[in-house]
Image 1: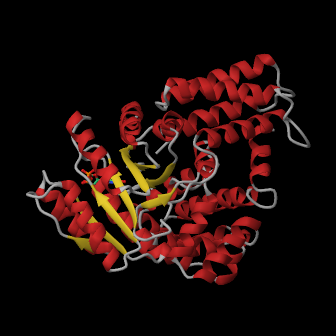
Image 2: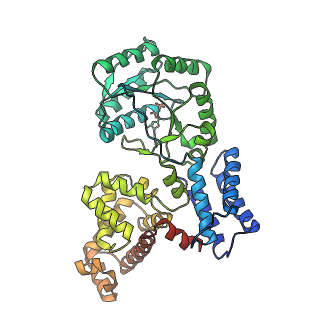
Image 3: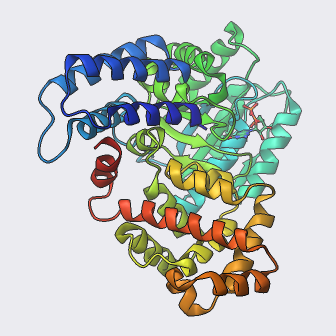
Length: 445
Ligand code: GDP
């Protein structure tokens, strides 16, 4: 996801290297690049214009302070403005003071509504310890009702049955009544979608919203639709006044533009992003983190958070510490990380969150089948002595031969691993201390 945009930005940052100060001229060059990058990523034109104007104003408006070079400062401005256009601060879900909190899902057919209800049920149950009930008002497709029953079961939540001969409003009201009597905290209401926006669907969901007065009306939209996602969001927002957006399929071939446009165009914050079909594939949306991800600075925070839930707390804290300090990150940690990655499932979802350079090194390392390549890397590390693992500098030619023989690989493969490890270690160090500021200095200076 977002690879193209990230690569374009990397180019922009490179051309800024060595610039002593910001001038109207070199800002103009850079802004042109940023503009192209955004348009290529399918960001809506009004949003691009607004962003460029804001970046220009801030960059020229003496916000270059302290020990930053102009180049770094400019990257900082771009990052801030990207985050701002996506809403600035993170927006969580609202819960009613009087349970149940009713949440209505809206969106086109195939956007991922039903899947998202399953993901949300799991998220609410596990992260917020809520008792969750789901119900489907899709009376046109019995299969949709059955699908909701399945994902609800997988999420460990309760499903309120409905059938095609009922009216959507009646179904929802009955579910609310049931939720009240059985002390549910949250009721997730799935609805029918159409292939395109049509009046009947809009009228139906409007009526549903008026009758059940949900505290959240979440618009679920497929990020891969690009500009169309934005247009659909606008239409739904006009009819329903949305409280939030869930951007799905960010794992797919999305150019990322929707993430940057939706908030600006609708005023409704993106609250979650969907990645993958599994019920674990739901992430809270953090504009600032997304902005740094777009700029290729990776998303160490999300990474660490994910690690926290997947591995035991202490190990995760140690890893987070090491990442932060960039210190003592050795081949043992490297190997542990690989094992943890596997625990966390989707390698690719994880790679998205790493700084571009690390992800690149990691993807080179696992050319071919990832699992197989990872096993080879583990084999090589296993053939090292503990001393070698904590101090790879010890590994000279004869040791390399011994390790290669032990792991049943060529010496070149050992060399490659050591090189990649070294690069990764360097990257880790750049996140140490000043973190982002340091990293920017290295790129912009
Ligand atoms: P609905 O018609 O809006 O209820 O959409 P569904 O929940 O049935 O989803 C349509 C298809 O998209 C299904 O095959 C889902 O597995 C898939 N899907 C939903 N969310 C995601 C996502 O975040 N990533 C990917 N790759 N697929 C998704």
